[in-house]
Length: 280
Ligand code: OAD
Image (cartoon, rainbow, N blue to C red; front, side):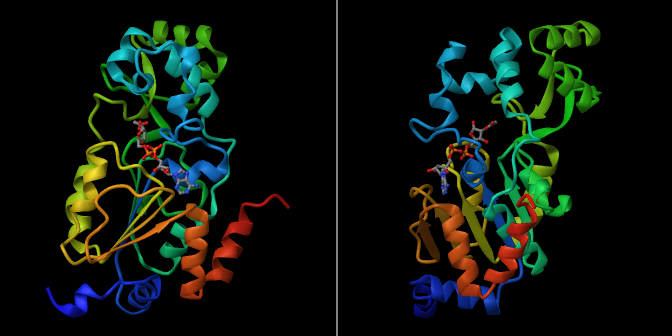
């Protein structure tokens, strides 16, 4: 490894120079932290995270709410939660718009998201550039036969409460759920296919708002080549971001992306994208 590489990213300005001159294929990996300022809690932040607010469901452990085995035995907790978190009532955050700006600059190779809120779509990011690694509410299926069911029908039934989802189970002869990847289920085919092509091409990896606790998603950070720079923007340090090519912004992600946009001379463009989502 050359000294030049060793010293490449001692500070954010060095990274900004690299983005402005050499970068063509940015992969952004995101998690629940990027939707927190939209009003959607993350999962694992003690006190405010979803997993510390599930006492009322009387679960054996918090993640059971997204476990396929538990859902088969007791679907009520998930359906009750789903009613609260169904997409439609939330707006994208400055971080979502920063990712869209990367697309507009022709720099976004892919956004791998763990989020199930579909706010990437709401922010106008091209669907082809998004990998919803843990699925989302856009489609729905029967859990055994994997037959596709009209997502609007599923939404209406879940919104109706216990009567609604029980009637739906009766109609189809088995449980139906939105195509969110539960613990115990495989990730979408698209995740594995694109992962193979994308990470070898990546010349900057940006990881935002995730605890990197859930596999296989968390391991994606190790798929970029040894000298590909990796930027973490997160409230806490996570993963193995300590190598010479890594740089970390340990702070609120909206603040982090605004600072980065400012250093890149993109503040006005980012602001105008953010204003799209503001009520007139
Ligand atoms: P976590 O809740 O595990 O992690 C969120 C991370 O974002 C934490 O490190 C927080 O410190 C950080 N964070 C929170 N708010 C932030 C902010 N405003 N700015 C910057 N950082 C912030 O969420 P995920 O990593 O997304 O799976 O969780 C991964 C998976 O675990 C989820 O997809 C979900 C869950 O079980 C399924 O639903 C299948």
